Length: 79
Image (cartoon, rainbow, N blue to C red; front, side, top):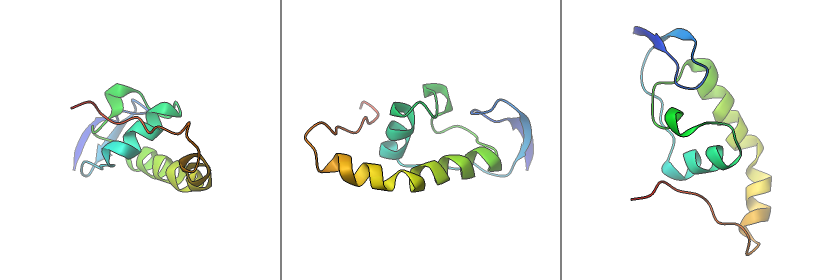
């Protein structure tokens, strides 16, 4: 464990490891305004990881609805 600032909440925390989400998940979280680009794929504290994970889970119904419409285009990281 090391003490560092969470890239999401900026609070100094003991960070055990690097949590990761898929590029598609980060794109969705950014499009919803849940995270900024600087948070992407950086160290997250336990609280922020679980909060973002819960957000993705809670919004699955919205994703299903949007995926059936032509207007849904998930934002992904540019190559």
